[in-house]
Length: 322
Image 1 (cartoon, rainbow, N blue to C red):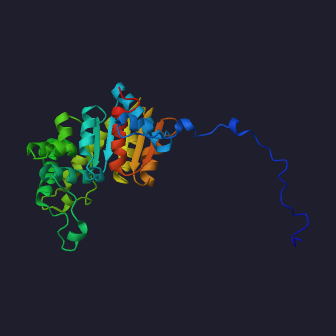
Image 2: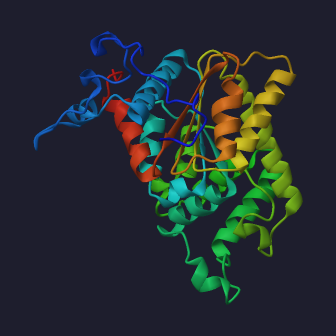
């Protein structure tokens, strides 16, 4: 016999209310399940076979909004970090640029480094552990000269750092220009804005580094990106891919600047792609700019080398592709 209070008894279950299982609304049904594919299945078959659940559902909805933005001639801005370049995704983004699914690129400073090195020599991403101890990490002469001379010439001509980099790099006719986002954007007249934190990139301790030039050109690009964000009103899309701090902060400041000046910024779509969902992208890209009915934000978790090709495939061959 229990030693507890005699009035303390287990709750009786005989009057619990139940209902028929089939009558209950459920979030998942067989219609949403994955389908098997065969050895001769097409890419379209593969996309249709994916389960219409969670990330796949988000990817499909995002692709639909990107199609809508293209039809409405609204900006589709790709905010990217250097990891996007280092995972070999430039050819996919360049192709999407030609198809009208990339109408502007916003990049942090590491993108400039890695994209320029790919264009010039076809390789990038040094082994930091092997070079830091000797004090030679980031000492590539050509990279430092290119970035800093572009900044100085851009400041002189009062253009943004991204445009200046594209102009300088294209002017060198690099051997691997067809794999360079900077070159592709400059040749296609697609706005490319660059947002650097001075001291955060290897070019900033090069002998030719000029803080004033870097500051002036990246500030011009901030204002240019703000104008692009202003034009997102009524159907534009912003993607944050691989930048955990700099670009989410810059994007949020663009949003507040646009609204501070009295412009409407509604019916927008934002998305964050990364292998972990960090605070700033979730807050400054996905949630805050789309709050109070201003739009819809998506979070798609996974490695860029998998998720971005999937997005491209959905855009080109998926249900909404024309």
